[in-house]
Image (tube, rainbow, N blue to C red; front, side, top):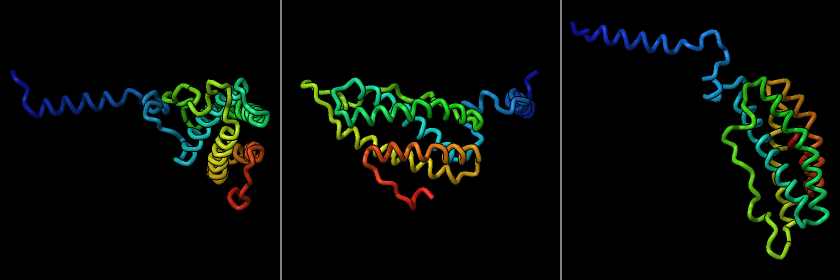
Length: 184
């Protein structure tokens, strides 16, 4: 006996329905992680991803600068970057857990020294360029901290208030001037 069309459609619907129920009872099942479903708004998600990625990259770059033929000023900035962000990276990862944000991002590229920060054949290093680079990156991180300072997630508010002075200190060390209207 050949099944009729209605029986086939009903069988497909049943298979689809029961197949989609495999994660019932698991509020944060594996599929949610693969779909990047989080318990935070877009602003918070962007904060986590942006600041974490920059903190990791800047820490690796600062360690490179420490071993490069950089100026004392560049090495001072690099030391401050390491001091600031080696603490921030695990804090962000722990804070992200409660919001179901995966850090480090599985797609994050492996660190490589940008060609413009590799010492040339004469052993010189662009110390001024490095300091300007750090200043620029701190502006971006400060912007993220300022935005999340007004987020509805209280743990992000507290974290931003705690980290703003540290990042501002690093920004000032690079010659950056705080825009008093932007952070309040």
